[in-house]
Length: 417
Ligand code: AMP
Ligand code: GLY
Image (cartoon, rainbow, N blue to C red; front, side, top):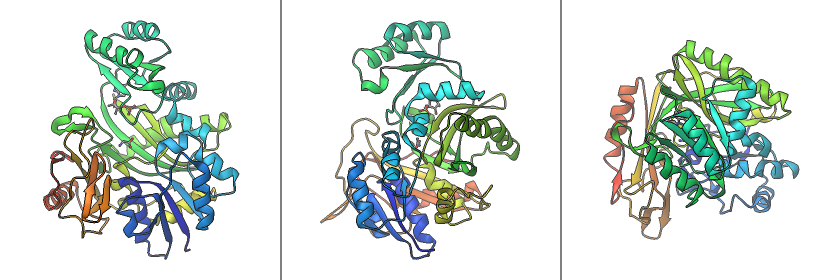
């Protein structure tokens, strides 16, 4: 059925969502707010500040939007879904109270403890002295995690006393993370292999949409600072049927039961990061949305129209499972030198302006100017490939990436190895 759909956000994730919807060829009218030059090729971009619920609602009314899909976490944590729902707008995304699973790391840990979900030992700390005492009790290495949203930068793994002291100074003295870092979860540092699970929830039921492995560090060999993500592959090589059964029994089912117990109706995407320690999936974090760039690899493998999934989630009638294509997908992020710290913007991009195939190329931080496409963020472009195996997809993606250029670009050469 044709719908008027509006996706909120402006990154590669949102371009991937709009691309998937456009590929259905059902004549949907697509809108992206605020969108990027990639989404502008597939629908109408509507400039808006996502922290301003009244403006988002006005756009929905003006364009008669049937359903809104929220991309990023900040508007969810700020309660945008509550405001839109109260005004009668159909919207896919968790409410403010449900979004605390991502918005407060301490709430998430308390939730996992109450639900009996495997998680690292943690201490809730609100002052520098509490944090120092907890870290000393835990021993090195120790994880310091800002309670609030910190754009993927709020986690420090201190391996020496000096690193611990420096991190404490950043949280409590120079206040690098502002209010988000004034409370901390001081955690046992687990060692294991990580994977991400993506589910969709309809308030009652959930369906697993796929799995991914992401590459958080900036440089090859998992070196350099943590970033929002430099690449991803799907499915995760760790996602065996046995492990997925474990994750279902130890993580997903207890999460849903605990939500219900707390009277929280969760409707939207749920992305869970787990670390496997001796075969047990420990939850590292909940995210109340899809990942970026994980969405770019998860959506191409779903063998069902995305709009049908959205409709069924909104109607509380999710299918128990979705079929996945027996393929592998890969995404490599092209970023600007200096990312994730300081970097230049406005760099001219060549070899990309005429490419409109979202199966192979997606925009992230780009901007269209009178003289062509330029960079507008740290993560600029996503190059994608899907193949019969990871090695086939990997070969293709690195062939594709060679054609696209901008000054000071860099990307990891070891995604999918
Ligand atoms: P997060 O933002 O919570 O996903 O944390 C970023 C990264 O820090 C994770 O992907 C893990 O690699 C690492 N991390 C977070 N918490 C822990 C922990 N308790 N033990 C070990 N590594 C962790
Ligand atoms: N790529 C990590 C995230 O979206 O949180």
